[in-house]
Figure 1 (cartoon, helix red, strand yellow):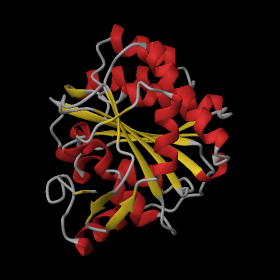
Figure 2 (cartoon, rainbow, N blue to C red; figure 1 turned 180 degrees about the vertical axis):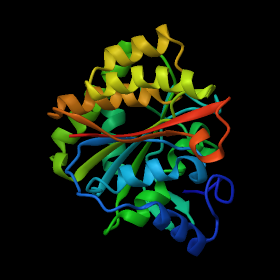
Figure 3 (cartoon, rainbow, N blue to C red; figure 1 turned 90 degrees about the horizontal axis):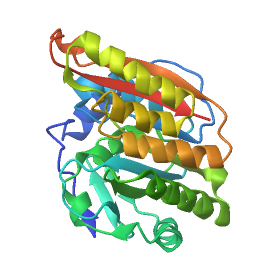
Figure 4 (tube, helix red, strand yellow; figure 1 turned 180 degrees about the horizontal axis):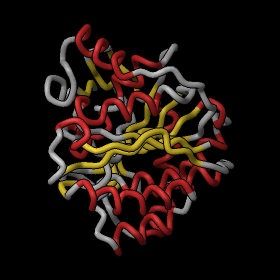
Length: 269
């Protein structure tokens, strides 16, 4: 099965050359770190591209990528996965790693095969051209689209990720990417205050605190569930630190600071 690019020409250019030029324009020279995971934004490239590109450019992109994103459409099951096929972008096709996907479903029955949840979800697709452009080699993906539920369920998914990576012996060959924007449509001042609380929790590798702060302060961070699960899994895999690569808001691009969306790029190693 081929999952076609549904937001090409909307969130990012549909033309290959134009897309490559836009991604290239965001790149700043940086040292690469051997990260276990990262958090990347998924808005239109004109707004969040600089954050997303420089986050991905600051790490080694592995041959297996677990892509965890939020469910914006409300379609499908709580925790969905695609186990076979390809995802298409203007830069080519990316194959789904069936061995990893099948292992995750076996380790955690909460994760269910569900094409409906993935077909129109942009949060994973938007990351792919960036990773394709920056990767020296081909990579495979495992796409997971996740809805909010309860912390024990997040822990089971994180454990399944750890078990799969450990059992398959692919820790050094796997990168976990949590796709998330931060606060949505609040003033620049309010967004930065709330986002700082969420970013602090991520930098402390404290999934509990992230979940609690999002709920207590009504932080409209769409991908807090993918981020929390990523923190849990990365810590099981030995993560000791996190680093904020860049934070900005849509207002920094548009000049409209009355209703902004926040974007944070964070590496976990």
